[in-house]
Image (cartoon, rainbow, N blue to C red):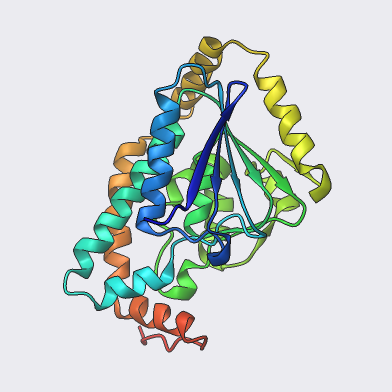
Length: 262
């Protein structure tokens, strides 16, 4: 199996690196499973006090691999496969969100679609000025159902609605104003800013940070398990529509989609 993610541990910090840069780090099912395995390894190592997620290439993550989604559309058990894809993705997001150590994302470039969920499941997002957020799912005839609970949790309903429905890019600078990014720096300063944040986090005790993180989650209630279960159903349902098939085909064929009339 091709290796899409790496895990390195040093000085109480684990770094999971996305390394499918040739495909803009698009998420296939086995890619997501590799990321989940890495998070599980972090969970069982009591010496790790911070998790950093980074990516190779100029794009942090372009979302789900639409080529794989198209293959599902032409298979005999597409519905079941789409649901399985959503379940695997939901498991990763849930494990990241509930991890009892602080999680930091080094956002060196754009993050789109399902990649946004991966980022928003973490505690801190330090972004390069060249980065942006974008949810283009409606342009593909599908929904960002799995991302929605995390987006609403982090940014509130108004900002979430804008991103979910407009398809517009949200620059790193603007993302900070709605609470998505926690700091935005010049590209050349990204590594040093991330290192500075991690150093500050490491001055706190592991137990105090874990208790604080759980308390924050309880103070801003998010029935994540129920929301993700609903999102799995919505995501699978949306991918079954004729518009979804047309949107995926149009994207892969580099043409404008022909949406069905209401």
